[in-house]
Image 1 (cartoon, rainbow, N blue to C red):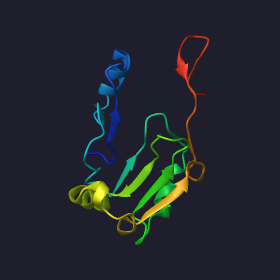
Image 2: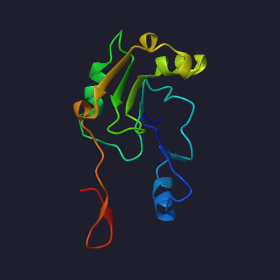
Image 3: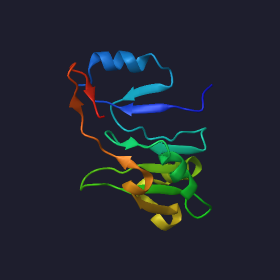
Length: 137
């Protein structure tokens, strides 16, 4: 039993070496589309879009914003069409999914929007090292 489960959205073009690497960790699952569920039984569900990188304090900062009135924290995406990071109380996400996520009034959800910078979310550009490895450092 673990307190962490990671679901990675990956297309068919994901290299086999990366699939093999991820398959070695039973907590990680590769999927081709976003799952319709939550992180139950975890009390929180965090959705991180591909390419987003969190600072070590991003989750604790986001969780600190949750309260009785605020049940989901979302970041404003850095550009049009991009998805932001979402930090949910799992109970709220489960209820919203049962009701139809798009049908729930944002005030009822208890949404709180913050900038990506406020949570320490970045989108580094990948580059090649002299050895031919991909890195974002």
